[in-house]
Image 1 (spheres, rainbow, N blue to C red):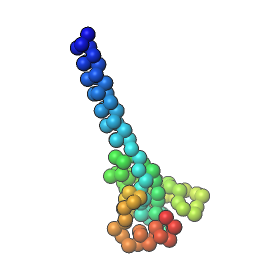
Image 2 (image 1 turned 90 degrees about the vertical axis):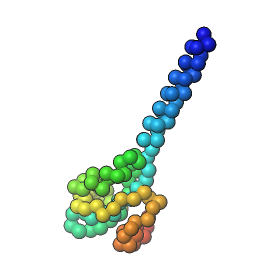
Image 3 (image 1 turned 90 degrees about the horizontal axis):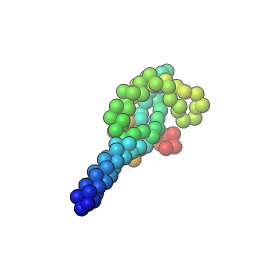
Image 4 (image 1 turned 120 degrees about the vertical axis):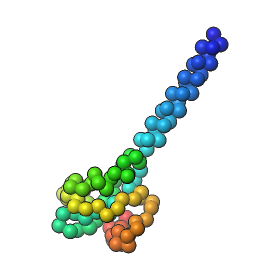
Length: 104
């Protein structure tokens, strides 16, 4: 009986750590991307994504239709300059200026 209790506690601890690891992988974050739309207009695109997808976000946005600030229709992304967490600053001064202009 004693061993069953120890085994139960061990299994319970194991499963609790596994579920915590899954939650960390699935945490969502706010991100911002400096993109160029077809036609040449540059905008800041905001998204709420899983943290593990941030690294490949720039490639996944190309040729994708997105909603932009001040427009009700989706526009196609031509080029992605950079994507950052919302609290981080862009490396480009043009992107930071666009961010200010769009009131974000």
